[in-house]
Length: 321
Image 1 (cartoon, rainbow, N blue to C red):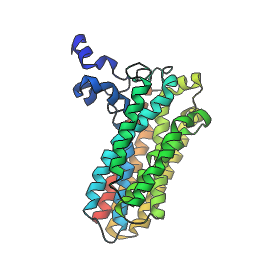
Image 2: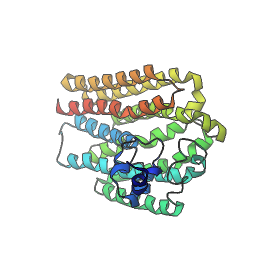
Image 3: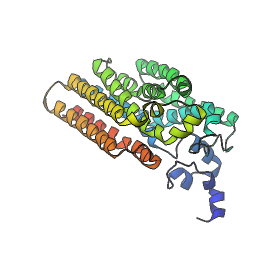
């Protein structure tokens, strides 16, 4: 693509850590490019990481329900995907609004639409509201308990961008927010939440601590210069044993959730196979990790889509066994 064509497509404004062949830069209308970049549509890994816990919750709820699946579950499955795309976009827009001054001082993030001047703060706020309203429309199609869970998640979404200012553990706040879909999707199926729901949620939070610590190592040096806190900075050279602990907690909690939901038989075997595959993938990431290689950290972070889908497939198999 020529330089002139790149200008015409808006590709010169591509965000640094976006995949070079992403569909936004290649196909999206030029006028909406900055807004899709602001919503991270050019970097879909985060959407997957928000969606997958929803599918975990739905699949485990189906496995734990003697009545089995119902037609409405198909809409829960699809509605969670639509909602995850919209809410991830809204959350990223909110995050970038609050962090625009920080982002301008970090090499990896200064190319984002707000610090680079592609979008004004006022336009970003309008875009944030539009995404949130559309997501709320999807949420309203779910049962009342699921709606209540969805509304409650807004407090976590609002607080997360500020967590790095007052705690070394902002990844905990991200985990609490990103895995909230476990509760929401379980409730959307129409059965009461149980201890298995709580354990699956805990597994997701530990998983987020695992993958987002890896992600945060990309910015460790810049974060130290501007005073932003993270588990990557907190753990430093001790990152590997900490990640091993998060891996163990995620696998143990997911395994207990499966056991409580299935108890025995083929369903239990299918669920535990999914947990084993999930744990094996995290172990593979841990063996490959080099915290001083930002490119590898980003690649391993993105690989967590596959890790989460492995567990999702195992939980889905439980509901069919």
